[in-house]
Amino acid sequence: MRLLQFSTSHYCRKARLALGYKQIPYTVENLTPGLHSLRLKPLTGLTTMPVLLPERDGYPTAIGDSSQVIQFLESYQPEPALLPSDPALSTEALVWEDWFDESIGTATRFVYYQFRSGPGKQIDPSFASQLVIQVVRRQYGINAAAVALAEKRLTLALTELGNRWQTAPFLVGGQFTVADLTAAALLSPLALIPSYRQNYPWLFERIIEVHQHCHEPLPPGLS
Image 1 (tube, helix red, strand yellow):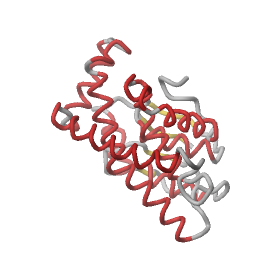
Image 2 (cartoon, rainbow, N blue to C red; image 1 turned 60 degrees about the vertical axis):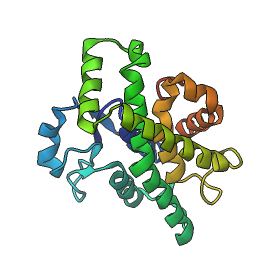
Image 3 (cartoon, helix red, strand yellow; image 1 turned 45 degrees about the vertical axis):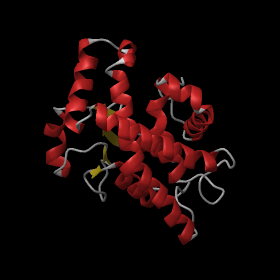
Image 4 (cartoon, one colour; image 1 turned 180 degrees about the horizontal axis):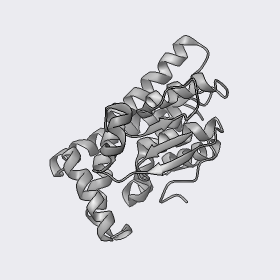
């Protein structure tokens, strides 16, 4: 299988974690933000990443969106499963995934790219890196007011997540699910921001555990 991705995207990390958890061999093709649409539109009609190319007869040519990738992988290779067999618990896991995808992952993106364009610029001050950061900021409308709202959303989310992850190893049903995987992937960029590392040490312990469970290299800031 081939995964089309942005190397720094936390949604692409989510897809890599799923592939690693199921121990499905794959290669990656890193695309350039802004130019990626030239590669993706003929495949999916969209510009969102990641995109998985199964590259095998009898399967779709391309699967776009991290949630759709996981849904495909669950049918392609059911074990080890990312959804509980109990329908109620499966629904709960999917609700967690959707919440992280639609709300928390977006908030993380805003906070992370604001940091990378300011105090975190020294992480990679190269022209190419800073150009990508500015392209992403313009694409998503990242500004001070939007970041302030994102920070509040993350504070509330981490309080709720902490109530679960600090008292139990998994978010749903006493087993590893797509909920744990998605949380670890979409919050991983915060590992480079000192205030989050200081205030939420339990979060990064869990993120490390999930990456080890999925046989995936640790994200920047934790490796």
